[in-house]
Length: 484
Image (cartoon, rainbow, N blue to C red; front, side, top):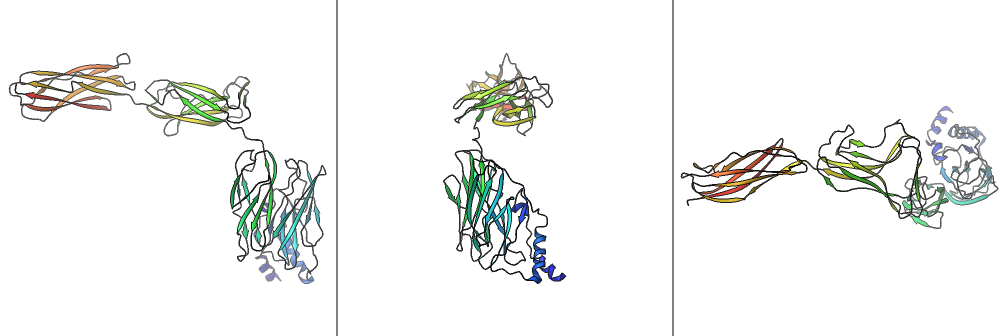
C-alpha cells in the first residue's frame, strides 16, 4: 500500500490555495450525487488524499464586508485536473462577491442535481461525478441587511477563465487594464478561440487584454467568458471604483532658457485644473508646501529650498484651492546660480523641478521640470579693417576689439603671426593684452603692420590669437603689399 500511496501522491497538482482563495479560508464539501459510488476499499485512501490537499485549510470562514452600492455575487473556479480521486473536483471562490454590509451566507447550486450548499465562508470545493464536464453553477449571497444577489456561470472542467486588472483601486475616469492571458484550456482539442468581457456598466469588450474606464464610482461585476467549441465558461470578479482622481497639470516656467554666469534665474511652478471640481491642498506647518529642487546634468541635487528632515517648523495653516479651468502660480524661485553651500555653480544644463513637500510625514513629490542652460563665459575677437593694402616702406594699423560673452571678465593675451613665411615679410608689432570687467565688457588694442624697401610684395594672412586660461580664439585679417 505504501508504494501505491506514494505513486498516487505524485499525481496531486502543486496548488497554492492562497491563489485560489485570496484572503479566505476554505470549506471543503464532498457530495455524492446519483451515479457515484465510492468503493469501501478505496474510500479511506481517497479521503486521505483529499485531506492532504486541504490539510492546511480551515473548515470555517468569517463573513466578509466590501465597499459597494449593493450586494454583487461573483466567483471564479479552478478544476483539480490532476487530483487522484474519483470524479472531478472543482474549487470555487466567491471571495470576489461584495456588499456594503457583511456577507452572511453563500448558497451554491453546483448544477449537477446535488442539493444546494449553504456556507458562511466564500470558498468551497465540490466533487462532480459522471461523464459530464460542464455545469451551470449558481451562487447566491445574502448580507446582514437582508439583501441578496445571484449570479450563474458555465463551468467547464477543462477550460479555466482567469483574469487580473490594474490598478486594483481605480478612480472614476481612470484607465483600467484587464488581462486574461493566464486563462487556460487543459484540452488540446478544445482551444480557447476568443475572450469576451462584460464590464458591469452596460458595456462590453473582446480580446485577451482590454482597457476600460468607468464614468462613475461604485462597484461593478466584471464577467470574462472564454469562447471554445465545447462551451463558453465564465468567471466573475467585482471591482470597486472610487471617486475621480483630481487632475492637475503642472509646469515650470522661467523668464529665459539660457543665462550667463551669475545671472539670476527666475522660475515659477504653475498649476492648471482642467477638471470640473475644485482641487484643494492643505498645509499645517511653515515647512510644507510647493518648493523647488535643482539638479545638474548628472542628476545630482545642487540646490533646494525644501527644508531638511526635523527642521523647526512653525504651526501655520495654509490652504490653496485651484478652481476648474484656473491656472495659478504655486511657488516662485529666484536662483542666483549657487549650490547648497552658497558657491557659484559651473556652466552647463540644470533641471529646475517643482515639488510638493510635506514635513510630517516627511515626503517630497516631483511635479514638473524644466531644463535651462548656464552659458560658459567667453570672449569674441574682431579686427577692423578686415583687410588693408599698403605700399613698400609704409605701414598700416588694425584695431583689435575684444568683447565679453556670457559674463566673461578677465585679461585676454593677444598675439599675431603672418603667412606665408617668405624671406622678407611685413613685420608685426606686439599686441597689447586687453582686460575686460563687468563695467567695461569691451576693450580694444592695435596691431601695426610695417614694411621696408626689401619687403616682398604680395598678399599676406595675419592670424590674431587671444588666450585666457583654457579659452583660445583666433581671427584672420589680410594685408596686401604693393610696389608703390
